[in-house]
Length: 284
Image (cartoon, rainbow, N blue to C red):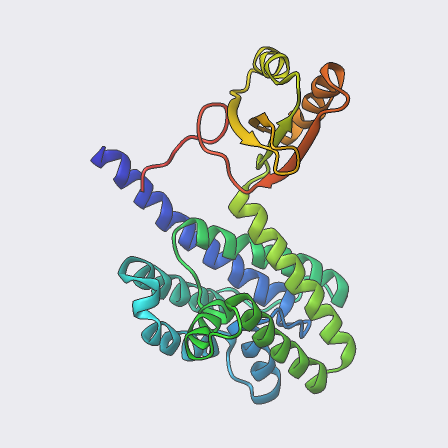
């Protein structure tokens, strides 16, 4: 058990280092040369780099270290120290990786830079850390003004930074910044959830037992039977709960339709499914 935990911790730190340098590469090879501001501390650093000549890595440290100090109680000891390391590594990467524009096209820089930044930050998060920025600032602001949710504060902070980029550079750069931020966010989600994120299916049918049997036989998936009551009719109903992969979703629909075309089916995304047939549990 201890050996497994050591391997997990080692993998976490490998992800931190690799992720930080990928994010640093995204900045120096795509975003900063093209003046594309993807929100957060590095976005602010990009603005200050092109206006005052301050290094993005320096701005990243000056902004984030005070935020981590203020948010120590919020993030906890382990996340605090890992995040400090991730922040320093990201800043170091911006100094070690030469600033060379791989593309003179702002659109391409936004797309590849945003995706690479999301990949890097996603790996950092998989390593159990964060690089601070908008998320941590939003958490602290939410403590002061709880009327606005953390997600709302993140939007406000990033919007202000992107608006500043639009004023200082031009409106077109603000549009590229929105594109880069969108791709960063989506890529982070993809790295966090993986390509094999599952679907959760709730099935209400008079033929629930037969449907469950076919799902277990043909899809080789476990099915859970839940007891429910219809509020309108007051009747006792059986609800099937089944988690499947995206690839199995079409087959599940066909099985249900074949048995009971009148069945009521609810599908929702599962960000992560752990257990037999899906991802294994990882000891932290």
